[in-house]
Image 1 (cartoon, rainbow, N blue to C red):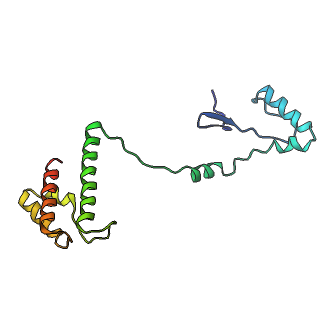
Image 2: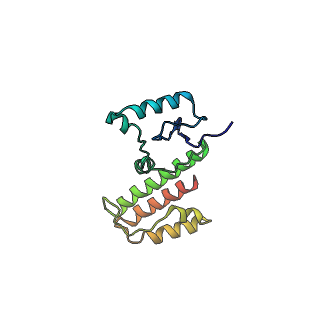
Image 3: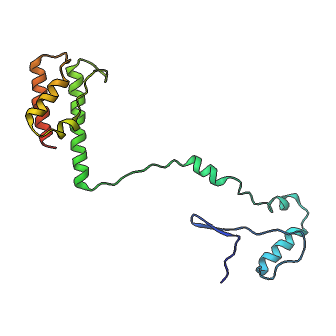
Length: 159
């Protein structure tokens, strides 16, 4: 079976473009209904039938790609998603506590405390030293800072 060069699949739909000729001779490989329809269209002098002869595939594909934005999403397993949620919870807790320690409503403090850095350190003494070093400019009392660091180390062990 030969493949028709004018037939194109677009999504779930199959579209067939036919050529319109000015002569009444037609190719014998075309189906009879197609030849009959072409003859009817050629014999008609109405302008509405002439406009239906033009098939406009101008830039439909370009318009479609402009409208549709693509996003890459990842699907995680239940266990991995639980770990992500737990870590995100600790990150949000750190953010809220840093706002309290620096007496600010937004993220304009100079603290560079990173949970990833804390998790990369091997011992609690190293973690405590890193956290206290990052929290030197905190506006709260040293007791509040130590309380925060103790809680931070406790939560970091659960990750």
